[in-house]
Structure formats: C-alpha cells, structure tokens
Length: 179
Image 1 (cartoon, rainbow, N blue to C red):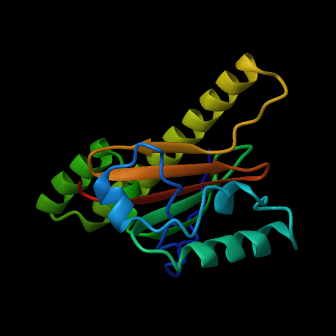
Image 2 (cartoon, rainbow, N blue to C red):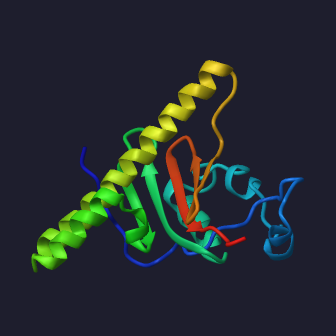
Image 3 (tube, one colour):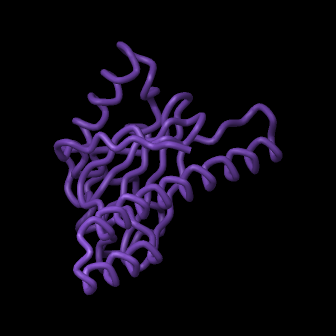
C-alpha cells in the first residue's frame, strides 16, 4: 500500500471541544469551552460542499483555530492512503517507531531516522484505518441502517478523535487536560 505525505504547512493545530457529559468534572466545567460541539465534526460531510479537497482544506482551516491540537492526519477512506498530515508528526508515530527512531539517532544514521519516522506515521495510519473499519463493521452488525459517525479515544496523555466520512477519515490528536 503506497502512501503520500503532503505535509507542507501546519493546517491542523486545534480541536473543538465537546459537549459536557452530565457528570462532567469540576475541572471540565471550569476549563472546557462548549462553543463547538461534536456536530462541528460530523454535521456536514467533509466531501459534501465544493469539491472534496476544497471542503477538506476548509474543515482543516476551521480546526486550526482551536486550542490543544498536537497533530492531524487525513486518510483516504477506501484504501487508508495518507492524504495529508500536519502538526507534530511525532504524535502520529507508534511506540515501536519511536523506539526505532531513538535507536537510529544514537547510531548517527539520519536517513534511517527519517525513514523510521515516515514508517511510524504509516503504521499509525494503518492502525487508525483498521480501527475505523472494525468499528464500522461492529455498527453494521448491530444495526444495518446505522452508520459510524465519530470515534473518540481518551488516554492518560492524549485524546484521539476520528471522524469517518464517505471519502476521508479525519484524525486529530490533542492533549488531554489534566484533572
């Protein structure tokens, strides 16, 4: 599977916050902005308006105005090919790729370090694509008329928000606010 990285400038830097859960913590109530909801991601299709790439650029531009985003990646829905990356590429690498990059940096092999970073981003993209497809199958198995709209994974260190679309998969990684 060949992948393209057309990184260029950092388009995705910030992620809208979500509506608070009824049992939100005091920290979330004090520090989270409710001005942008989940519908900002899934309410309009990434590919519905204008042509697909213009709509994608517009969506990424809107996300760039929000605080806390570390990195973003856009994949082609059908194949999982990388269309665009932005932000800290190190946030898009797997632990295995980070270890390989660290080992390469100690051996003074610069091309190997760059190759391992690129491979790490490709590995991350493949994991996201497989996760989205498995989740979509789960939703279809539960209800054939339903569709996957948003996936949100929160860890101790970060949150990954994945918005699958008919043509694209938008993935944004942002910092998890400390409680």
